[in-house]
Length: 164
Image (cartoon, rainbow, N blue to C red; front, side):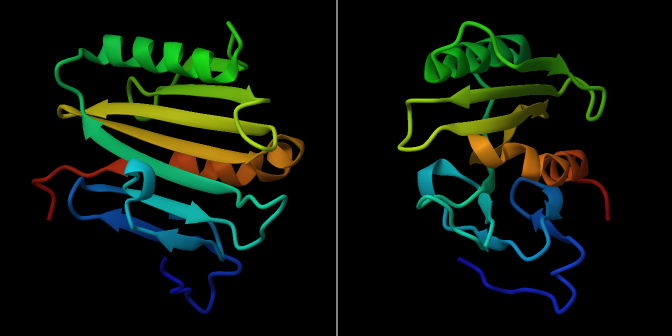
């Protein structure tokens, strides 16, 4: 886990760039960056505070799309989330215009973990790869993090490999 914090990181986000899969997004101010690949993640940003043995986090998972189509991948993701949450309806299931074709899900898992958790997840499909950005917080604290999560999700960008 990286503990590299900018002197101004307590007040402003810094950018994280993945040179392998060419995405970037803002690291919440003061959060720790873990690129160890635990549980299949490309990167996880951890809130420095621990609550109920849990650290609020933002995780990015990248995987190939094949053999699925983008529509099949979104449907599969939706079905898996419904199964994990135990709910037939998600709190949020909406298409986003930025980036084009992205999908945002929001859901709660009451019994899957030792404490109830709330998730806000954005799925992006680009150039044969799928990118999942998953924001997770204890259910009773999720609204405290919503603005930060939305800013992080909005900062997500996939870079063109031909860009300098």
